[in-house]
Amino acid sequence: MSRAVASALAAALLLAAAGAAAQGSASQRVDRAFAQLNAHQPDSAEALLRPVADSVVRATPGERGAAWLLLGVIDFYDGRDGDSAAARDFRRALARAPGLRGEWLTRVDSQLGAIWQRERGHALCGTAPRESSKLSGPGDDVPVVEQKPKILSGPIPHYPDGARDAHITGRVLMVGVVDTTGRAERGSIKVLTTPHETLSRSAVSYFEGAKFEPARIAGQAVRTCVEIPVDFRLGY
Image (cartoon, rainbow, N blue to C red):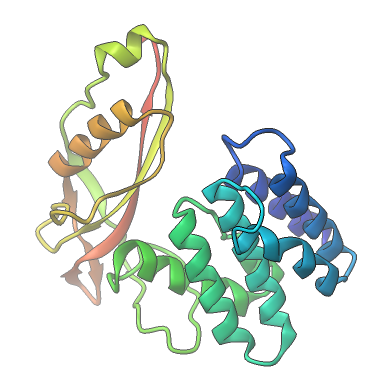
């Protein structure tokens, strides 16, 4: 595993475990498992990860998601049913932590990255076309758009007074399906990460009210899966 990939993996795991008690037992297991993987000891890594993934030890959803993600990497290289096993593990990871970022998997193996992209697209947006990524994988029936959607207009995000007074700041990251008319489909918006629930509600209202230039494939407008960030900062 290259140093760049190792750094990307470490950053992804830190993000997945955000909000957890620093270096709790689950976090320690995930960190040690990563070290074992980096040392090409997948059996030792799996032994550390299984209790986290299977809820034997106390862990946050992010830690469990990170454990299943790493188990997906292990199963991918196991060779007995690698692609299918990795896909199942990734689905479990995303069910527990939808905000997990796995783009770095492409740098480990392009096929592994393709499996992650496919499962993430299904988990977050059903079978809506992806906004980006040219990767494809076996059984990948989710097309990739050729022209990305663009925000044309939208309401000014409302900064709730209570959150502002409490100096709550940060980014709300959402995903949702934009239809062929350029509007978010009702009920499709999911919040992936947020600093506070009150900011989530305001961000979702912005997404619901935004007008998009729809995505296109071969010149035709298509519904697509889109990630939208909304930042809340003091002083504006």
